Image 1 (cartoon, helix red, strand yellow):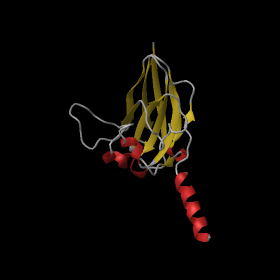
Image 2 (cartoon, helix red, strand yellow):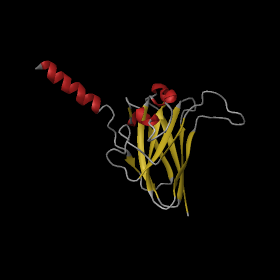
Image 3 (cartoon, one colour):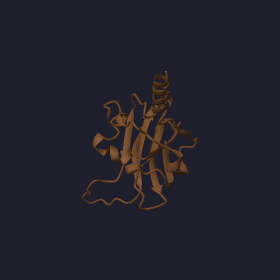
Image 4 (cartoon, helix red, strand yellow):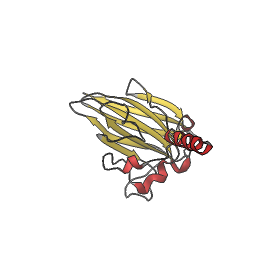
Length: 176
């Protein structure tokens, strides 16, 4: 009986290892402040390289192993959004991803994301890119809505197990 009880306890804990609900912000334009300690690590990142989401490849998973802090907002029709995370400590290694869904609901929040319309990610490069320079900021672009509105979920993540660090999240929304 103790074994059965322990098994159910471990199963329950593993299913709720990551249970943060995204933080909603009404105006999709502006600056939010936060700290990675508001989030949790995500034990299963396979949603990201699933063909239904194609957010980042499995070879880059180490850059998304720290705490994830989730936000979401509305992306009105005929709009475009750009999101940048700016760590307060320029030496802190952060990553970011953002994806579009019709409406944030069960099955639409990572790690249980079954599919999304678009997903973009940015992380520290493995090598230098000709004609480009990377600093400590990370930006996702090309979040767009044409005729129909969407909701956008934004994940601010500590790379390589980072669990704490202050940051600013800059959101720019351009609408017709």
